Amino acid sequence: MLRYALLILSLLILPSAVLAKADRGSEPVILVSFDGFHPSYLDRGVTPNLSRLAKHGVTGQMRPSFPSKTFPNHWTLVTGLVPDHSGLVGNRFEDPRRPGVIFTMADDDPFWWNEGEPIWAAAEKAGIRTATMFWPGSNVAWGGVLPRPRAMTEGGVRPQDWLQFNQAVSNTQRVNTVLDWLRRPEAIRPRLITLYFDLIDTAGHEFGPDDPRMAGVIADADRIVGELVAGIHTLGLKPNLILVSDHGMAATSSERVIRLDQLADPALYRVVESGPYAALEPTPGNAERLWAALAVAGTHHRCWRRAEVPERLRYGRNPRTPSILCLADPGWLLEPGAPKQAFSGGAHGYDPAAPEMASLFVASGPAFASGKHLPAFDNVDIAPLLRSLLGLPAATRSDGTAETFRGVVRQ
Image (cartoon, rainbow, N blue to C red):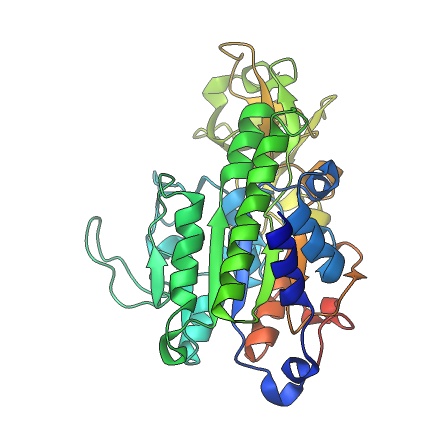
């Protein structure tokens, strides 16, 4: 532990020459996501590495975008677009141009992804080498076309290095892959790297965020950070390291389930997605009957037709969004029917303003000031920050701004 502490301090205490603008511009930028990591996990006394980076870098709570789900928010982090604008409007959704087809997290057809350009595509087109370790969507040939099922994608841009997600690849293997990329000669070393870990989210769903067993999983995540920083130090590099999460986690229980089949006759609708929110499509000819059944707000949920979703959610203009959206209060679940057995655990997908959904932001490296804390900000600002660090111009389409980081990023 002491070794990691000394190595992290050496990463943070940089000689003035490294900070000189003339010497800047080639540092690697490493974006690390710990899926489901709530900022309060740093207060549990089991994260010495993360907490040290936070103390000597820049921190602040982020608000996820709606829906506060994994794929939409990971895509927002790298596109700077809310899901309604990026096209990734859920973990499961439909597109009227492809009737009867549902997008799932296993789908790498560019058709579903092409509405928002990821940072690695912009960087690659500008001649900046990139590499991604499991980041959602990084296996997609962005901008390409899949002419028919099971065909090869035609055209498109991918990172120079990327790996198809496989949960069996250990966290240490993921770190070592990134370190191998950084070990390359400068000419073929990626300048932008993304790295994804799912252990916190997996445990949060199974145990719930307040379960004592979470402490050990959070400590494992912190150990991973220590391994990464120690390996970077050994290589003699001074990267800009940005650690984020896509959302937080709320405790759930089988005692807090709202049954959709008790709100409306199941013959009136199809369920596209359920859980913290329900995405519903009326069956043919039943739109008005369905809305009449759902229009009255419940004690722990409320429903809207697509055009009436509250503006603050920035959702409902994309035709991929559901005809009817029902949103539960944090900790409650909207499910098709009664639970098959008693359960407790965790979930996300709730209103981004809910404190339980807050996400992590910690940044450290030569571009960042030390010991700064930002007011809460939206996660659409991360992609503009990445573009600024890489020297890319501002995106022509963006819902975020790098101005959020004025005063904490060295010029």
